[in-house]
Length: 364
Image 1 (cartoon, one colour):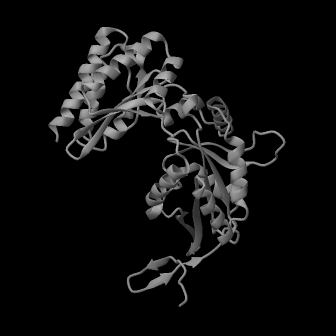
Image 2 (cartoon, rainbow, N blue to C red; image 1 turned 90 degrees about the vertical axis):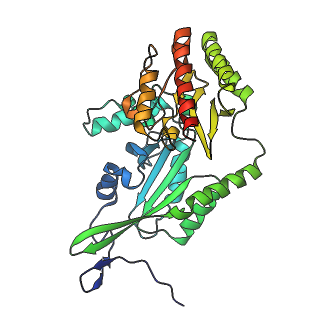
Image 3 (cartoon, one colour; image 1 turned 45 degrees about the vertical axis):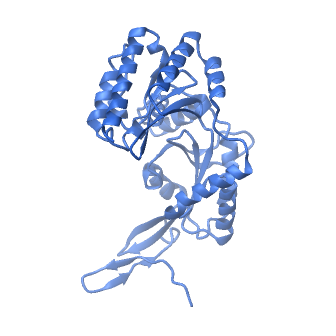
């Protein structure tokens, strides 16, 4: 039995009319000056959690190759975006892997420099460093959390079987690659595009991630998370003695307030169970900060109510020196642990979080 190809139809009052498929080449749409320019300015079409850092990036020695678009995601990972207007994708997978290797060692300052050059070329009156910090919801650079991974996004009118096979194999080996097909159609002289993520399939992506995580655990006996002793070792190496004492006081106090403390990457957090829900509130980071987890709190009642998160923000801001931007009520804003060195400040922080814990338990 013959398979059917995907098509787009125009639905009329009495008829369904096939919209003609076309090519970017026949529509005289160029790869760099048209397709790349348009997607660069609307990167949210590809992924709403991306920030464009620069385009045509080639700041490496002994190479004339240029990366189409360099972006950053919300997890501070660098993202290589390669575009092709061809019908098979060419060898873009190999190019993208090379670029990923080349940029993998970039530091925060190097990314800021690349973004500054990009903004200058576009005559954009914006502070590159602050724009990146705002996007990441960071108050200051965190080099130990920056560019820990490199993702790849391939965009083409079509992908050959050879290329998709290679991409699926690389994904299975923990290289994060997405293939997004952007297929052009001609509707009464206008070019419209159908944009679809084909690898991994969106509906199967969560399942595939779980399978990959399970496979990774089988292949690696060592956990990727830190242990609590490792967290404390790193915190003591990074912070002054008074800040370490603040973190220790918070840990001791939390043992009496929540169900469990647990280590996370470069810090520790806590969990409190209410009914069927597990709630997470804040993280003590090994670079000496308190990171308020509004992002997770906003997903479950009672703090899915923005007015309660606003009330929490206002209570925290009564601590001298603590500022939390109102725009970050769904993010992960942070402030330095040294703001809690004074007993009065620590007492306000504890009473505020006890109010939070109480609200959660009332809601069960």
